[in-house]
Length: 240
Image (cartoon, rainbow, N blue to C red; front, side):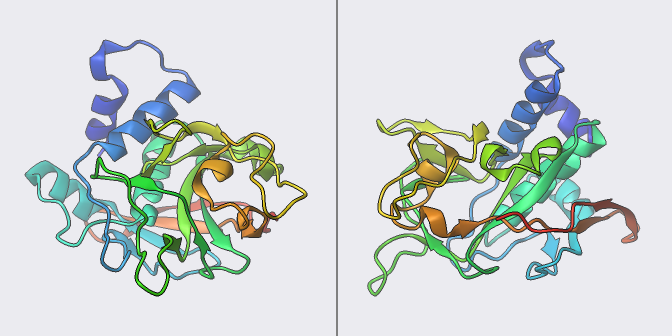
């Protein structure tokens, strides 16, 4: 597992090993590793107990490692939980303290509508889970990664999203790397003052104020022996 991440970090023989650089390289590494987003159900492939509101998620990094080496990706695709927990785990194994957090609408798994995105493994714009009755893309939740040292001020959080590329406002697909979360506008019907914030690019106008960020408390890694090798404890309170 460390070898995979080291390859991504040292790609193109770049010498910059700063925290920001490692975080960016790992984000791109996960995004380009061969995953495809699960457009059918949104269920994760490598994360156990995905509905754990208060944490206690389990990342099966052993199975991912085997799949990656054999170039066998999950049949039904991956979710944002897979991408974020893999990214955060690899970063921590390289001394970079990133945390997995979950965006949700008001309450955990209540959901919110989104703008067009390019999910991992796709190069066309789409709105996942849009249908005849609800033609706008809808997410029950979306999991991303943030810098640990900014958790006390979530409006200024630096977001790393290996799952979705977002529209930069002029049609370019950009991967959210160190993209600030963004302030809430006083008007529910407009985007934040800076429309290029992460929340301004992802969330449909009118629902921006509705999106909260509860912080998971723990995730565990399942190793080759199927034992829980280590746990990552996170801040337990929720930031609104």
